[in-house]
Length: 489
Image (tube, rainbow, N blue to C red; front, side, top):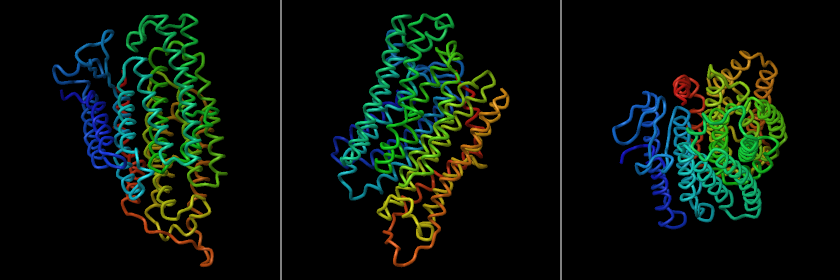
């Protein structure tokens, strides 16, 4: 069996189990090798989707712009189907593409710290397996199963070091993810009771504007549960402590990837089976997203700790993703804008958390005020932070610029000027908190107030720089991603 759809799920499960059997703190080389192969498989899948869904005989069947695989040869409704289209391919590429440099970063970051890295490698494998399975799942129940796997692995990673603050943040995260998953599962049960199926392909023609009340309640429950798991304002209460308190590699994975999984699921349902019901509530996520941009940016500007500044920035940047829902239409601009924002934010936020992790690793401190003098000692790290900030601000030629340009174009096409004002205001507010850190780093510190900088491993700095550079350079090749997003079934 050489089908990339199946191996993208099986491979991380294999190396995660191997890392667990090797013992606490072991398995780094196995994990890095596994993710490298997964990245190659994701490119192979993207090439198939981009070519129109052509697949080898006997392994996958072409269905328009999507590729389908029946596990064990038993397709739905008796078996389980996997399916991939352009959006799936983009998410899989982002997941493996962010994970590989972050695992290299983690190997250096956790060197000599056996307590913090005790179960990092197996948990990361289970997390990536959950991601890949979620993006490929083609029915509502298996989406729930994979969403739970992602959530539980993420909670375990937050609590990995065992400090009181991290355990408290992990418990808060656990309660949020369980409530969100419970609401989603209740919605799935109502859908199954109404139509007797959970297959997305089967449900799509069945749900219409005259759907039973139970189906409308199900859609509302699933939307609210997934917004809670995405940490959309005002359901964001769990995110800053979890992302701001976890070790830097974990924070980077959570912010770059984990919160995108539930957003991806909302987008799938919104453009799939629940499309006929979406118009009635289309402005709710957009209004909450606008509030998230303004509130999250304001909290980032006021943050005292570096990691909390970046965590609140995540709350703000997630808001852009939800602006697309009232704009989704036949031209596909809003969908392309959302996809580009997911890619640009994922790369930039991974880079920013990695850069901040290096700063904390070297200075031993987590306050914005303590980065004074860092520019002369750690130019690569500060450059990485600045490049990631360019993407978050939406300056050309970054991926963030292309995403916001497409979003503004979609908003203007529908006469939504207020949305343009929110997007531009968010960029200006992002500039404030990014330049707040950069300004502090370039300050000269008197000798009597200067604290000692430990020696940093070049690998840590250059992995942060690689992710930040990718977030900018992706804007130069963004049309390839946009074309791939056009192959959405």
